[in-house]
Image 1 (cartoon, rainbow, N blue to C red):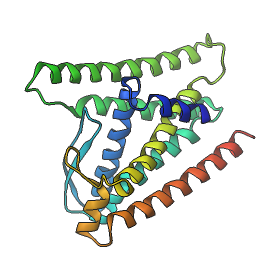
Image 2: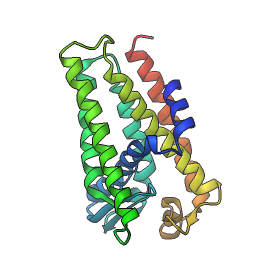
Image 3: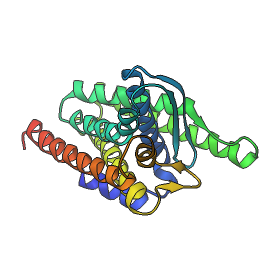
Length: 232
């Protein structure tokens, strides 16, 4: 996990991690949609953009639960990947299957401005990068099944990278949206914390603090559980 954290620290702003960041945003938006459906609401649309933002349009449901589900859900996705990265093939297969499904959804809901050739090329490039990541995971799956890969449970390393990315994204976005004066960014629109404060109660920074505390608690519990399951 330390290696995964360093990977994201050095390459977060580069195109290398673009497909991983898109799937993370996709899972964030899916959590909004799932929360809306579970609270008897309807989902009108989901989309993610090339600037790594996302929008989920819902009607009805519990807005407090729906808006909170984004960051908390991202952390839960990340924690799930980390726990499924234990040295167990069946767990690894389950984690990879979930991630491949997320990649597939990301591929279809990615939207770019088609007004220029540059934007069209950006969209095609990002979709191609998602397919490359999917191909890499499928390749590792096949190699491990055929037992031709020298390292045992190599898929667990991929799941650790994905899981670490999810939890770091949620924590970083909570801090950025609510404490670094980016609560109402003109390019990306209102943050979840701002909308929750406006539509329910409290302040954006208060909700950001609560979400950050929950995220840290989940991360700590997951690391402990991972070490226990791994026998360390």
